[in-house]
Image 1 (cartoon, rainbow, N blue to C red):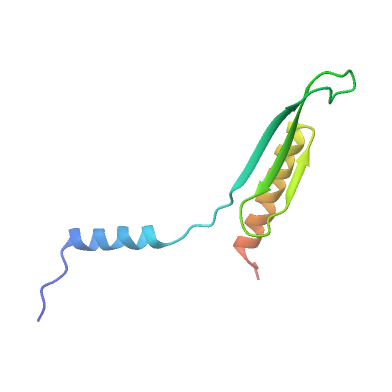
Image 2 (cartoon, rainbow, N blue to C red):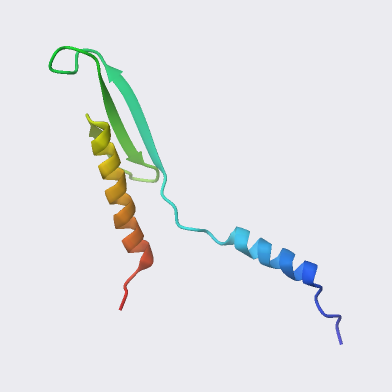
Length: 88
């Protein structure tokens, strides 16, 4: 009969399994650039580009930081719903 697995070996095995499980995540690249004369008064204004990292990812452009925040929040909510799967 084999020796019982030690508790330290069991903990190490569980930790290794936890590291190999992939948790869902999203990765976005946010670029911020200052454009001269972009505002109505000719003042410099910030412009933003958001791209989700991955093959075939679309790029979205924004003129307002609050729009960037709203877009990211909507994407996270949408993705969380997809990752959770059907609730039936």
